Amino acid sequence: MTFKAYLNKEFIEANRENKLIILFMGFFFFGLATPPMLKLTPKILEKQYGTDMSSIFKTNAIDSVANYLGSNMPQICVLVLCLTLGGILCNEISKGGVILPITKGAYKASIVLSKFSFYAVVLFIISTISVLTNIYYSFLVFDEVFPSIKAVMLCCLLVYLYILFMLSIIFLFSSLLKKSMGVALISMGINIILTLLSTFKYSLNPFALITEASKLSTELPIKTLVLTAVLTILAFISSILIFKRREFEA
Image (tube, rainbow, N blue to C red; front, side, top):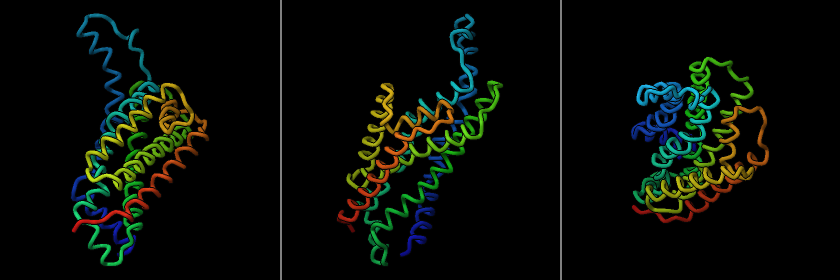
């Protein structure tokens, strides 16, 4: 079975199991909902407590983008990602789903590569659409001048690189463990740890990509970018090597 054939198979399975819809809604909904939620929060609190809250809850477009990327993205979007793709390799092993393709000539490495390539493209599309939507509606709702195209494109790139890093982590632990829930919990745990470490402003922390992206800056965090790329490649290669050594159950 060729790489192209297994790529097509992955698309059919992802579509049948509604993974694409789940991932899209998990990212897109909060990207769209965050700006109006922040805009309406002071008014809702004012009605509830009878006090003008606008001076206390000062929000703007940048705050809206930062809230989505720094809060909703790691807490909810990545959680959806981990739960949806936690069984990407371990389910194939436990259910023997890869036995037939292997008997038809598919290489184990090609199976992992096709799966990773498919979701790398899917997540690029989903994360980019979600981030662009959030930025657009944030500056539209708060009636502010839109940022430069360079800042927007860099923001999308940095977010995607972090999501790609998390995808490689999911693949790594899905090749190691037998249960998808265990993969999801460990992957999410790593994400939470990196999120907490970001408060200390370490540049050598993959989550610093999200921190920089939320600023809509035009500066490229070279050290963080290189580190994240290296860790992503190492995690992905490790997942292939481990998957090749796993025994499959018929």
